[in-house]
Image 1 (spheres, rainbow, N blue to C red):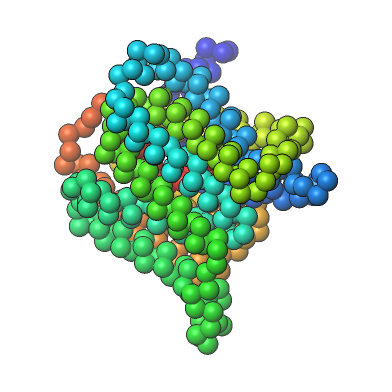
Image 2 (cartoon, rainbow, N blue to C red; image 1 turned 90 degrees about the vertical axis):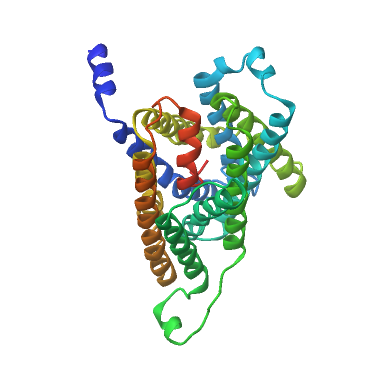
Length: 351
């Protein structure tokens, strides 16, 4: 029976794993917000044991355990010595920006604004990466990718500039009524784009396992000390709360273990174009899940901006498909190149 199950898993197409991963990633932000709401009902001495900082910190520990199981063999001393001092420097910078600063900003944004706003404004990242790649890396960009990026950027602009309802739109009220949460999300998108460009430019030769483990370890440490500095030495006092770990032992394995495992398995079994196309559905899934779990109905601005962003995604995917058809097919096991290329299209995945 066990052998037959293993054979069935191996026969499943790569797209199946990618869809599972994207559904999990799309739900991550809403699940995170829901957990903090559950924690708010169980205050301990006036503190929420399932605070966003606790979720991010413990979630990173869960992610690190998974990475060590999957990639631990790559962290041999001989492999580490092959990485130059220059690469270690850029790896450190990318880890601080992408592994500590950006997630911290996004989780803070989740605390003070709608999940839908975080999702839609987070779509700034792919157009920024495309612009930086063209400007700094001199990568070739086709017409449809440019048009799609402009459309997505304009969609984000509409999301943060239009009022929340049609009545205010008719009366020209509440224009540009974005708040701190939207600003933090935009800054995080820039940070993630910069981290991705550094990885593309300077870290292409670093093994995926070392890259992921070092980024997670350093990002978690930096985030921990930043939180202590900003919020006080007792900020993580509930980190060992049984109530927190009861939920994190569900959240961690599903979001981190299952999500990342499906993601990597799907990447190895599909082309970059297929993975990028499936990944482009992440914001749609995120908006739907926010409605189902949190009851967040999209506002007028989110509807308009979301439609324009969706149009930009479609145009970008058409450009990516054209580019892929002109390139020679690479090895399916080229994990690090595929991972970084597709993640630049998907953006922040909730962890």
